[in-house]
Image (cartoon, rainbow over all chains, first blue to last red; front, side, top):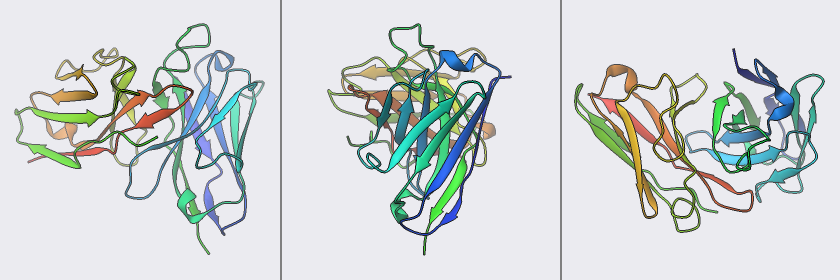
Length: 126
Length: 110
């Protein structure tokens, strides 16, 4: 069964850091990029970041650029989102998600995602 | 990049049809045929119900249909059922590794 599970969320003070993990199973992990998407309380979804299949290329939303970084360990089927200098507006439910197409497809980076994790909650508050 | 605009809520009685719009721009919905729709029940992972504007993944009932005209995409749920009560949101690629989601629509089955 294709599955993604996020972990690492919690309550943190503004300015502090948090590292989220996304553990994958049920598919060939190295063939897929991974997205991070967040949902602030009571609001819509916001795309946060994308790591390529090999972790060699990362892309970030302007709102987190310079503060968040990505890494992945393909030997452990896991992607990490390092969140630094956290702000209250970073609070929300953080999802990782798998693109519909694998890296072999020329459209892997354009298509939407098909599998999401259940999310992990991040609360930035003093 | 601004979020795609969806109505905050729509409602219908069992058996009826509801349509959710997803308004974008010529830089996202209007430019790319990579529009997806997701169903999200609270405390569950979102579920893909439409990909590539109007294609249903395997296992999604044909009560769910979608289309696109210009800069606006639409999702129609026919034969509304109690289990359809959820949040629905759209997605579009917006170029240059920019991805936009809709503001989300709560579907209520009366």
